[in-house]
Amino acid sequence: MAELVGLTGSFSGNNALHFLRANLRFRNATDRPLVLGYVDGSAEIIDNNGNRYTVQGNVSQDGVKGMGTIKRNAADPQFLLAPGEPGNVTFNVSRFKGRDPRIASSFNFIITIAELEIQPSQEIRTGRQYPVTFSSLTTGKPEF
Image 1 (cartoon, helix red, strand yellow):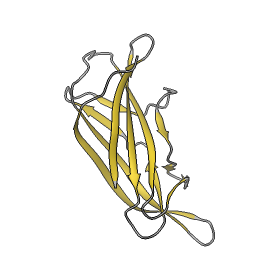
Image 2 (tube, rainbow, N blue to C red):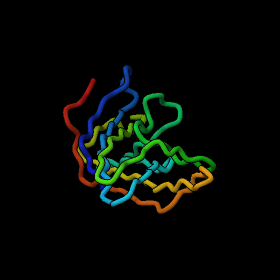
Image 3 (cartoon, rainbow, N blue to C red):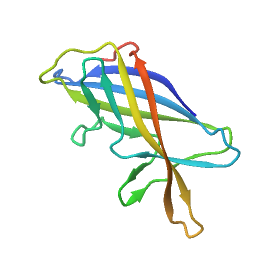
């Protein structure tokens, strides 16, 4: 299970970037341990103006914290949940305001989370992938 705990916005020092921070709580609703990972490049937030927020490689604040990332040839199994256990993850995405300086009032957040399987040989395999979507979100108090 995934629950959005909060969505907050902020700006860079020169106001060229708008950041969104999504705090999520995952809970293992199964009867066995569960290892999850974020599928690299899948996090995006689309605002009601059509602007797209992503994890940009050149923006140091962007990325995921609290959960390992699954890349083409590697997977980080750090996010392990026992049965019934919750765990918190933060996603930071941004966009350059450039051609559209408007800040929207509503957002849709989309990510893909995958289940990881740790083999007896300690090899990590990516199992099923789950798209997770939160629609019609509004931000809490902006952080400046």
